[in-house]
Image 1: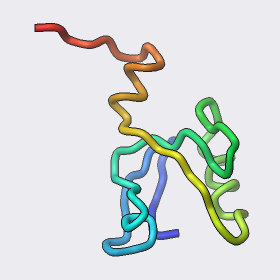
Image 2 (image 1 turned 60 degrees about the horizontal axis):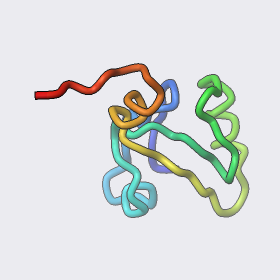
Image 3 (image 1 turned 30 degrees about the vertical axis):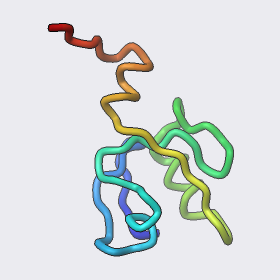
Image 4 (image 1 turned 90 degrees about the vertical axis):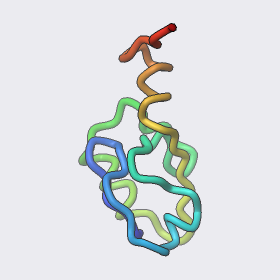
Length: 79
């Protein structure tokens, strides 16, 4: 697939690979795979979904910091 994932977060990319060319970035959180939300999904299930995917893989990601703000895991700092 051209990337590695740990706990739903992209941790490495194959330089110039299809994932990188498609906009996947290190540090982004996977939020959807083939139309199915993986927000509260365990790492093992995410890996299984990715490795068992046949044909085209559709994946939505977002920067981890944005994800943490949206889910209330982090609070914004106002100046």
